[in-house]
Image (cartoon, rainbow, N blue to C red; front, side, top):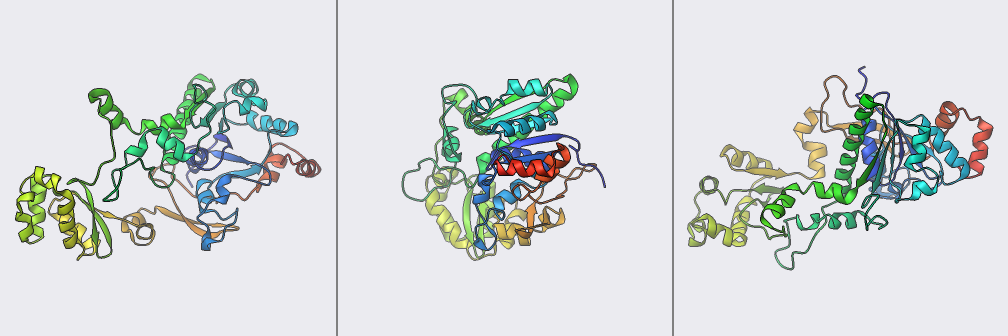
Length: 403
């Protein structure tokens, strides 16, 4: 079986929830040997977030944690204790990369700041993920995903809104920003790692989640810089809109471009309402978008979404099917053909299906080799096998709350 792309790269992870774990998951799934550090008895906060199989909360069955930590080893360690600090340094000496997400100054307070770690391992790549970065007036501000999303301005970039009411800022669904920020962290980490291969020098990466989120809004930033235009949330217009179908929804963009509009009118059978003066030209269709979209919806509701998609697409009309999670998992032939979902057995959660990767590597393919670790699952392997501690010493470390 072919090796993975990052086989031999040793990563130490001291992060929790989404951004940091997603960064290291991307590395682990490509073959890096990731050792995930969790607090003894507590673990990663993601363990307490659902969804849970059969909706029964359990720290070893969180769908969020299970997905974010595939292909990793897991240990428990309190680096804030004297002995914990010693163990942390022993692990750092053997690592190529450290990814951490503690508040600025925390690592220094524990005697584990970058300057100290560089003394122990001059080639170390240390990626520090914080809400606003290691410097600046916001340096010590605490924040959650909601704060970071709105702190980056992305709340005004979500166009869909209720038909009535104020169009205030709305955070993107789920952990969208956190995943994007984790991807940015992984990319920066790999750039620094490959730089080290050429220079032999380690590096400290200061990743601000605010800035990482903001970097995804390049178009809106460019519009402001060139035209002083500030993006706002807008009501649905004659651009792309959601239209209901018999079994779901499609997204349709046919009323702006005259050619697309004429093709749609023909497919609908040239109904009388399309000759209404309000819809005569693009300007009118834009001005009366709400009424127009309601008329189109009365037509689309009579069709299954896949049937209507193919009919409109053949006519050259921009259209897409809105897929639910169930559609993607159970009925999407494209994903099934490319083997996007992979199954693996977890000792507590059972056999589950996981998303794989958005790319296919011909020589170093992605593989789901092992499920997310249970809390402290690899303590004996790491402390005993890697660091050489005896069983008696490990028992003592557990009694002291170090591991």
